[in-house]
Length: 122
Image (cartoon, rainbow, N blue to C red; front, side):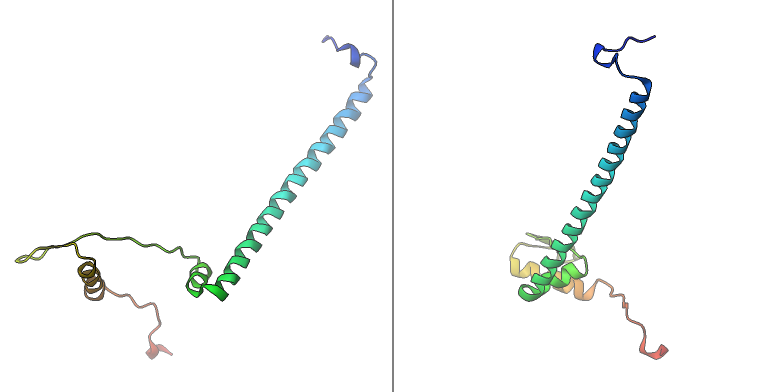
C-alpha cells in the first residue's frame, strides 16, 4: 500500500473524492473560459478587419475593393524582358519598353475567358 505524505494522513477517502470533484469542476470551468476567450478574440479580430475595410472605403477605395473581394494585391516587377522572335530576338531593359511589351503580350497573346452569361440566353 502506498505511503501518504504526513499532511494527508488525516484525510479520508471521502475527502479525496470531494477534492477530485472540485478539481474536475475547476478544470471544466477553465476549459470553458479558454473557449470563451478564443471566441472573444475571434470576434474582436473580425470587428477590427471590418473597421479597416470601412475606413478604406472612405480613404482608399482600391484597398476597400481588394479587401471586400478577399484578394491580396500581387505585383511583380520586371527588370528585363526577352522577346523570342524567330528572326529578331530582343532583350528589353528600358522600363518603358518593358511596360509596352507586357501590355502588348496581355492584350494580344493571353486568351480572355468571359465569365459573363451570354445576352442571348435570357
